[in-house]
Length: 243
Image 1 (cartoon, helix red, strand yellow):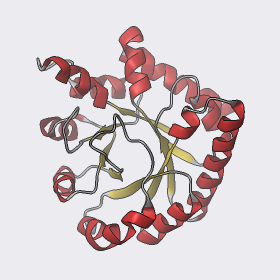
Image 2 (cartoon, rainbow, N blue to C red):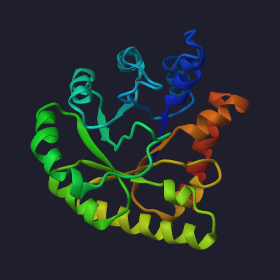
Image 3 (tube, one colour):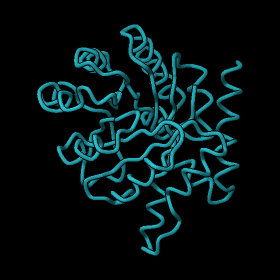
Image 4 (cartoon, rainbow, N blue to C red):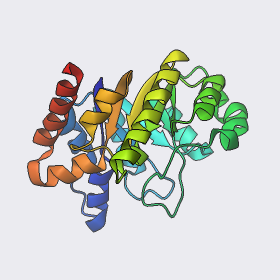
């Protein structure tokens, strides 16, 4: 199991003043030096945080896994193929949303992905990941499409208010992970995870490979620094794995 750090919100902070700092590429280096296995970024159509120049610089600087999150637009497909990240994670994207609000609706996007999107990645060597809620129907359609990886949307679990709600979503995530593994795809997870809920997720959901954490980690680093914060997340992952 590996930690991938999403550095989008370092760019958000930079863009608030437009003075060039803090630099998300420098942040990525600190995270990797602290033990993160790779870096995640989401180049949005509105460029609200990560920008095109950041993407090319990240490709040149990141030594571990690079995960390019994106909407499946022709513009993003072109940039992704130029960058050649190890992993491309397709996510839904709404212009008015504050952050990605849920997994892809596979029934809605399947035909487009099959006929337009996935063919454009053939022969590139880029692994294809789909960001999904733990719905069996969506997972099966992703497998039929030929996805290599499923990143389970953990936002519902992370935002659960009651114990009952949390346990119900953990059960769904566990069953989703088991199905993904059974179908021969890799199980990743991300969205809303933090120091308080990560350990339970790891203990309850099997087959997790890469865990993507962004906003909570970057927020905590304002007080702790990136190096210490990354190491605290890695400590939780190690302790949960041992139990």
